[in-house]
Image 1 (cartoon, one colour):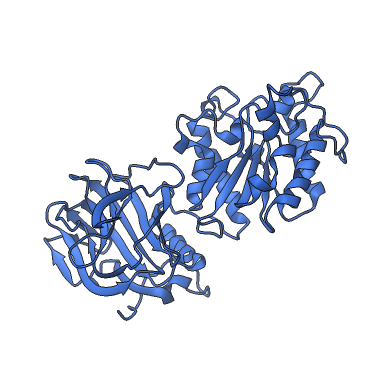
Image 2 (cartoon, rainbow, N blue to C red):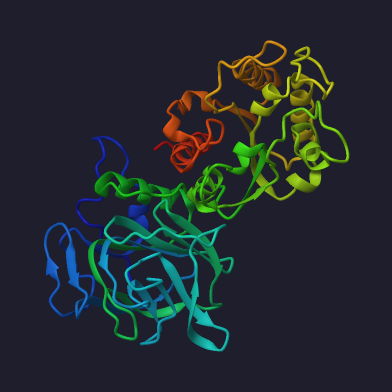
Length: 442
């Protein structure tokens, strides 16, 4: 199918700036009051300059065209108003009349952005969660949302549900489709929704896709994920119970899960509750797991080999356990500075070339509590900041979580561990600082 001319309102940009990169990659686009790209209208959707409203009974848009979706992306901005079937679909790519790929509801009354993919015996109804690394998703009924997929050429499809979920799953070997449907699935289950825009791009390039996401975020105010070189990689999470996410009610509410899904990445947690930066005060064998999780021990080739970045949280337990700071140039891991210096050196020696280590300061409310050797969290935070400066290496980066200012008791489960509210603040805060490393600002 030949490329279509872009809509006259591609996004809000200041005069003199270059147009968004995605405009030269559009192969299908409908919205902005113009739905003529779809060859067939079923029912009588209410179309305005802003959106098309489907009644959930017999309204849909259909277009028959041939497209090899390998290496292409498909996105929709929509608000699902209600569902009446576990197979309601916002959008589908079909070979003829049999659904092969769709962004579908999970249960009646919910829409969780799941992929319907072919079963091993042929085109079936296998539902694959679109969230990685957890099986949880976000019900977005009633919310304006950005949904989509990127059909990579490496045999995977990435699906996106704004910042609420992003996942990877294997795709069919061939995805040469002949039909695009918005508003129902192949079995005839219609969806009650408002549709603002549907677009297909001839690329999955991160810079191009990012340019589209930034455009729709500006035009519609929808939540979008970060598309960076961290896509389809694994983040390493190291440190203490805050690194683990203790205090949050569910895994999918933890800051580390929030960060991973925002980057379309997976993550592995090597952190452990009650661990420290230094193994000072730990006794083997009772504390062997905690010792292994200290920064001077966790930065091994085995832990780092497959990681694209590492985020480390610690310091609060060091204060609580009276770990001495030691000299700033120490290499004695029984001191805080020594363990930091050793851990940074081990990271640089053992991590894949070029990947960064993000060192986070503490977050708990007890910043003024003096420990047995006269030190507070602020002293350990200062040591972390100084260690990053002292390392003088672009791969060693500071995330000063003290400037996040988790100051309200409502942000904590127990004053030490952020609860769901605190984690909901931490995730975007940390994510934004990691994204800034790749030149992306929200």
